Image 1 (cartoon, rainbow, N blue to C red):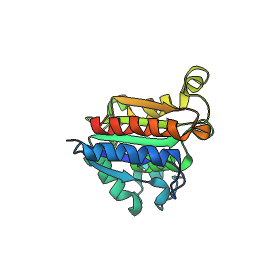
Image 2 (image 1 turned 180 degrees about the horizontal axis):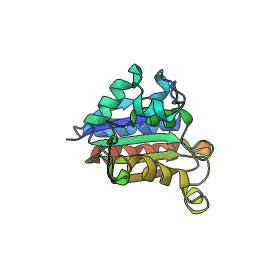
Image 3 (image 1 turned 180 degrees about the vertical axis):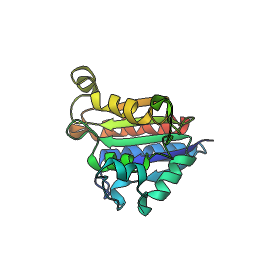
Image 4 (image 1 turned 90 degrees about the vertical axis):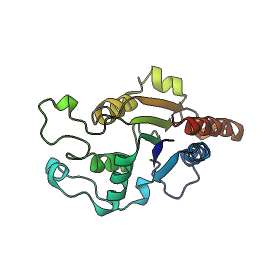
Length: 194
């Protein structure tokens, strides 16, 4: 049994999008397999964006994010699901990650080697990104640059590895049958905590 934290990164907290269906399917598969799953929806939380490095290094974590940071600390596996917006993750998800991944929690405050300062080692992650374009085009033409940045500059930097990736292309024009197929894949991944 694994302890899983799923971060629903879609900026619309009302639901009804493919990201929400994929997240629900993952949670259902994980719960059916006996895993403990918690879901955090940054778009439903009230927190400010960071304005400068001093706030990040010395400021207090907003109260609305304290349970989320605690859930990250307890999780063995993290799942981030979000739509590709303007070539990157939505701003609310980026702001959430900037707030929770602070020195003293995600990174050592004083490290002789800043490339090995991560405090969240021992956790794995799955990143699921939906997009309107075909997934192969995002990989081939754009080099999946924003996904690589998330993996290298955030997740791996704080010690989270391995990071597995699922790219869901054609989201805007996806048929109901294709959406069901993807939800089936997410249920299977949830069951394996993968």
